[in-house]
Each structure stands twice: as structure tokens, then as C-alpha cells.
Length: 561
Image (tube, rainbow, N blue to C red; front, side, top):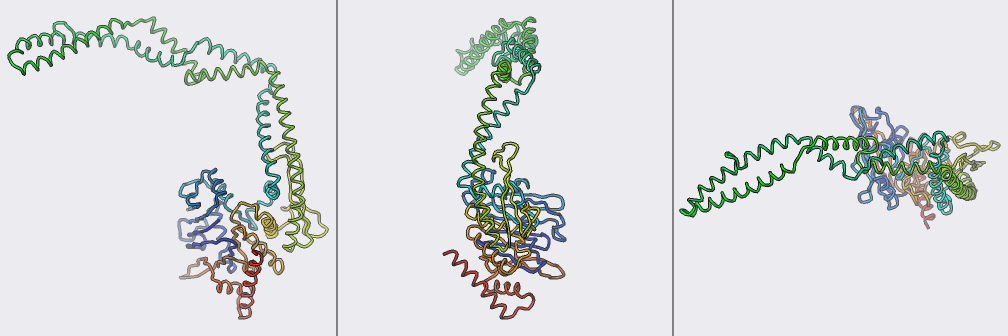
């Protein structure tokens, strides 16, 4: 649920912080106090586009921050979106300035689109002009499926699996949609590519070996000249290192018996002489074996050219060329056995389509059965909300093609006036009516809807009296299993609050600002009195407000029992 809201420099709000509670959170205030700004700040944090004009006058940026406490089920779903709650909390922050907007989730920057996906798991906003998901057929389908989830969901999951299986084989069949001439051309080309690779008789690691040999041969003359010079300098020629060391060793050996220290020097020089002799033997051996052959160099160069050409065409490595060859051999086999393979795939596709069709029919039957129950209960819920002479229905149409959710296309239909035929919601109801319809649906789904926080804005538009009381009772029912935030101007609804907040506008030093604060019991009664009477509040009105609040609490306690 939404436990904390922090807003800074947004429209008339200089800075405001609110801690919301469980159950029904009611927000009230005078017209023009800035109630809509509060919903605007939530929408801002959740990635909705907002005009830069909403930044408070004289400020360069605005901030909206939401803190959610989520349950285990929601936490697991968030992890699928790479969001990992810390101590069960998710913090969503959005800062906007004149030039840019920055969104963060638990301190990590992300896109506004990602925020919106995350928000779908955390709350649902229903207002007169926005977030009217109820108008979309897909959303209506979700409501029906959720209502009958105990029977519908297993079949729906089976249908989705069968659909994916069917689409896979259909995609394989698309590769067989070619004419005979094209098939022959492709076979000829594949045979050419495979033959070219096979004739090269490649070996794994051959290119690396040849690169080393090529490098050695390409520098053959340079190597020969350098080693010959080395041999002359270190060898037994008159001025060679070995000859000079030999003479030096002979000279010091004649003196070694005269002094012990000279014996050590003689020993060291003897070691040097031995090492140099060993070096010269190995050098002579290398030179004897090393020969530069123009023919060998040409062969190595030609083979490398062949390997590099094949790698350029079919892969960056010999392993990749082999993989390419295998892939083309499989494709060639498919084309050479074209009719047999195509017939087998068509048979498989028909079998999978038959299974999918059967699952879709079963899903449709279940949906129609649950639709009758949903229709009855929504109709009753609307009557409870003072929709007089209301008629509600759910129509079914069959889609032309399969989907992962079956072949059903449904539409909620309604008539709110006697004698008028039922029509689509979007063509009949007003924003306020739509909010009340959603309220009726949310009441039905209260035990099944996993969205923890619901926000209702302007749900009381155009209602009063008994209708307002019914709406208030419905809100209270939802508040038992969800956190509900509701902006209202009706005392009947406000009296049901578990937590009551006042949004008020203040003018100080010729500057206007909006603030929000939580009300105590007595302050809540005073606010209800204002809502009941307007400007002049008498003791009789206060008494009426207190009775209204106490009666609402008694009704809630009765429902809880």
C-alpha cells in the first residue's frame, strides 16, 4: 500500500508530506484548494506526462515521491521487472525541471515507461478524465476472468500454452511457402556453399597454426641474418664471445692456485663459459634446421587466403564455419525432402489447432457462464448505487484469429434510462457514472484483486442523498481488503474514513500555497460540518456531523462482525 507521499514545488504546493493508513483514506477540502494537484503529483511520480507549467512559480524543479509497502505476492511480481523491494518497500521518485525529467526506483534511475509498468502492480487510479481502463475491452476481459478465476484461469493458461505451440509450428510452415523454382534455386545455392566448405577440408585450430608459421616464414631472411650475426659475436671466431671467454678462463686458471678468491672468480668464469657453449650449440642447431623456402611460404600464404575467405563468408572462426555448414546441411535436407516435411508440419499444425480450438471453446463456455453471474451481480451493485432502471449486459464476439487469451472479444453494455437499448460504456456513461460502475466492480472483486491501493477521484460527481450513502458504504467495504484513497466533497462518504485528511489553501506574504494535514476526530467532525452546511456552522450542524461520523463507525463495526 501507499504509506507516504512527498511533494515539493508542484503547482500551489511548496512542500507537503503525507503518511497514509490502511483502509479508507478520505481527502476533502474547499473547491480550488488543490485536491486535483494531489492526484496530479501521484500521476507525476508514476510516469505520466505533465506540463512544465506545473512547476511552482519561481522554482526550477518539482519533485514527487511515493513510498509503498508491498506484500509477498506483489514483491515476487516486482522482481520479474528487476525491482527488488528493500524491507518490503518500493520508493518511486520523479524530479522534473524545465529541460528534463528523472525517474528513480529505490535509488536506481529508470525510464518513465518502466515506472508505469511497475505502477500497474502497486495501485489503480480511477478518475473522471484519466485512467479509465474500464472502457477498454481487454480490461473488461480481465475483470471477467478475475471474477471467475477459480475455473477460468487454469483453462486460460492451458490455452496460452497451446497457442504458443500452435504459433511455433505455423512459423515453421512459413518457411515452406515457396514455389518450385525458388526451391530449386535455393537447393543449388546451398549445395554450392556446402561443397565449398567441404572441399577446403578445414581443421580446428588450423588457422592459428598457419598464422604462426606465416609470421615466421615472412620474417625468414631477417631471422637468418640476425642469428648469423649473433653466432659470430658469441662464437669461436677470433673476436667471438666464446673464444674471448676461453682465453680469459685459460689466463685466470693459471693463477687460481695462488689465491682462494681467484678460485671463486675462476669458477664463475667457468660457469659463464659453459653457458655460452650451450647457447652456441642450441643456436647452431636452430640455424641448421631453419630453412626459408619460397615454395613453402607460397603454400602457407595460399592456404591462409582460403581460410580467411571462408571465414569472411561464413563465420569469424573455423568453428563458426563448421556451424554454418551444419545449419545449411539441415536446410538442404529440408528442401530436398520438402513435400514430406511440409505435409508432416501441416498435419502437426492441424492437430495443434484442433487442440487449441477445443481449449478456446471450453474457455468461451466458462466465460459465458461466469458472465451471467457477473452481469447479475454488477446489475445489483449498480442498483445499490442508485442507478435506477439500469440494464447491464456482456456481449460476446468471436475473433477472426486465435490469441493467447482465446478467441473471445467481449464488451460491457449498459442502459441507464428506460426504453433505451444497451450500448457500449464509452458511448453512454459520464465520467462520474463510470467511476461508480468501477466501484461496483471493485466491490465484487475485492477479495480477488491483488492491486493493494485504489484511488478514486471525483467518484461523487453528480450524486447526493441516498446514492451518496450507498457509494460511501461500497467504499467502506472495499476498504476492508484494500487501501483506498478517495477525494470527495460529500460528507456521507467522508464520514466513512479510517483516516481523514484536509487539503487547504493558505495565503502568506502575498504567496498562495496548498498544504495537506491529517485530522483528529474532532477536526474531522468540524470538516464534516463545513461540508454539510457551507460557510455558517451551527452547533446543530456540528451535532449532526458527529452523529453521522459515529453512525458510520457503528455500521463499519457491524459489517466487520
